Length: 321
Image 1 (tube, one colour):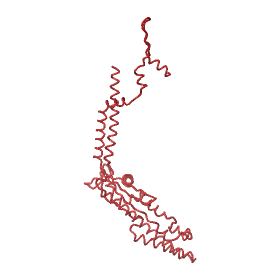
Image 2 (tube, rainbow, N blue to C red; image 1 turned 30 degrees about the vertical axis):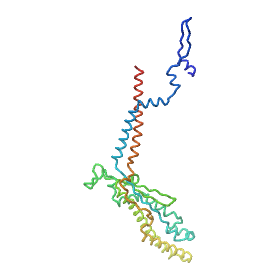
Image 3 (cartoon, rainbow, N blue to C red; image 1 turned 180 degrees about the vertical axis):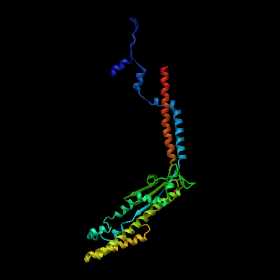
Image 4 (cartoon, helix red, strand yellow; image 1 turned 60 degrees about the horizontal axis):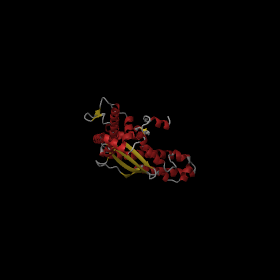
């Protein structure tokens, strides 16, 4: 139907008998006038007048729910340890020309030409599931990770729930507690823990870094000893003077690596800022102010929707009557 036809359908025409005064006009229905006028500020005010009580109740109820969630939720705290990875001591012990000269022999001996190799190995290790399992075993962390399954009075796992598996422990630890961020521009790594216990949160963050250093130190020490055995065998079987001189240089580098692994405490990661226990007010969960604001906003929306529904129902009843 065209706009002109719609206007014709919504008009009323009056006719009077012949001889009388004739009044001619076109009257547009109120419904058509309202449709053309649209939804204005007066309509908004009218809606607010009819729904303000529901909006107010919604704000109060939503704010109360948000406050209750913040009050009931178990607080969680975050502790961070900032560390910097050390440079590859093996590479800095010799020139790249020597590595190029030795070729495959240097590769077999475990020496790399990339300055970033040892850092990549160290970061990969602390992010691995194997290292996470090693850390959890050292700390005896399963009762802390699964308090709902642990019977503290009996010091045993609940029979109805059972003992969690290592894979379950690693999954919960890496998803809910451990956070590792790597800033490649500055070379800094941040090892963070999020837990309800403030003191234990800081302890785990520092212990995690310490265990990483110890694991990498032991690994480097074992590799250096293995490489020295190989290089000693290769030296005895090599008559060429130039090759023997190169092997001597490799042996010297391996002795230096062995010395560093035996004496350096922060072997792979130098602690820049150790983790400290956060204050009771420094919780990361629950964010009570945010929950209160979110609950109030949600309550406002729900109250407005309920008010509009009631208003529409009342108007339909009036029209039906």
